[in-house]
Each structure stands twice: as C-alpha cells, then as structure tokens.
Image (cartoon, rainbow, N blue to C red):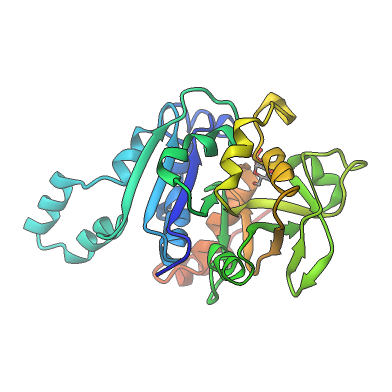
Length: 292
Ligand code: G1P
C-alpha cells in the first residue's frame, strides 16, 4: 500500500489566460490531444498508488465534477450499443477503488489557501499536491509524483518537485536553494515565491508537484498574504522548513506549462506525436506543413 494515499488538486483558478475558452468551463478541462488536462494529473496520482482525490474547486468547475462522476446515461447507452472499448475509456476516468472529494474554495485567496481548504479531507497524513497546469511526462519511466513518493519513502520528509529555469524567469515561480544531497536531490534551505531575477537564490524553480507532511496545514493557518496579495504555499513551506527538513527533487521528465498558451500548444504537439493512433498521421502532416 502506498505511503501517500491522498492527492489534492487545486482547480479554483480563473484561467484568464485562456479566455474566452474558459468563460464557462474550467481551464483544467481544456484537452491535450484527447484528454482533459486534469485527467493527466489524476492518472499520475492514481498510478502512484493514491486512492483519494481531493479537488478544491471554484466557480465554473461543474464540468470537473461531472467528469469524475458516474455517467449513467452515457454508460448505459454505450453498453446497449456494445461499445466496450469506449465504455472502458469512460469508466477508467475513475477506477472503482478511487474516492473523489470535492471542496469548494469560495474565495480565490491563492494556492496556499486552496491547499488549506483540503484539510478536512487530508487529515493528519502526508499528502500530494498536483497542479494540473503543469503536465509532466516521463516517457517510459516513473511519473514525476511516483519519483517523489520514492524520495518521500526514503527521507520521510516533504518533497518539492523542481526544475532548472532561466534566472530571468524567476518571477514566475517559487525558487529554491540548498546543498545537494544525492543525484537529483537537494535540501531546501531557502524558498521564495516569485522573486525578481536579482533576488532569486538559484535557478531551481518549484513545479506543480509537492509531497507535504500534514504540519504544513498548521503553517498555512497563520500564513499572511504574500506575492500577488495571495496566501502562498511557498511561504508556508518556508515556515515549515524551520522545523522539518524539506527536500527539492529535480524530477526526470518533461514539463509543459499548460497555464500558458505556448506550453499548452507544445504539450498538444508532443503528446500527439507519441499517441498510439495519431502519431504516424500527425508526423506526416507536420512534415508536409508549409511554414512561411
Ligand atoms: C504556483 C506556485 C509557484 C510554482 C508554480 C509552478 O504558481 O505558487 O511557487 O513555481 O505554481 O507551476 P502559479 O503558476 O500558480 O502562479
């Protein structure tokens, strides 16, 4: 049985960068090739042994709730028409051993606040946080969160997924610094939310994958508004670091920033190129594409 059973998905953002697409639907429901973004994240968590998926939702999130609900009419119809493969695709969105919890974040007070909203479902056990905007793909290898669960099992402390970025980009990320402990693994001695390049402690950026000990919840209760006037998870982690060791793990895999249009397009192109049914036709199409 996995040591980390609960995964939290903060999905209450407004998705303003994708308007008008996100006027009535959540940005996490935008599709990458043939699956909504959120499903890449939930599949990653389920494959790593998590069985309680906690969605912290905001306005316009009904499509997410429906996506993770049983679709009686659709399933009955597909069954009657003997469409077994399609029925399996629909039912596999939520495997039968998975428990979904939906919690409403009524005010958009930031990522830290969203994680705190999950407290009633998280309890006193370590848990994962996955930001679906960050689609992380590790072809043929363990997923990002699986790699981090392995680190947690070895170190028994909070683990933050990181990657190297250009320092000029530091004001888009939480940035961490600390001594290297092993291949891909460092200790977090400093963590700052969206510093200017001049203030960035290193070129190591936090990506949307965390494994956190439950002590983070108490820290979040007293975290004041920080960058962007929001309650930042990064600030609570900086407090937690004073009482517990925290690890930064530079994961193996490719991250697509699907919170930006360009990252979203890159994810669509690269995942289509690896898609069983589509890759040959799509490669052919791209080869013959005239770009002037
Ligand atoms: C959030 C976190 C930030 C992290 C980023 C990764 O920021 O606050 O520390 O680096 O996710 O995607 P956001 O992108 O929600 O502004």
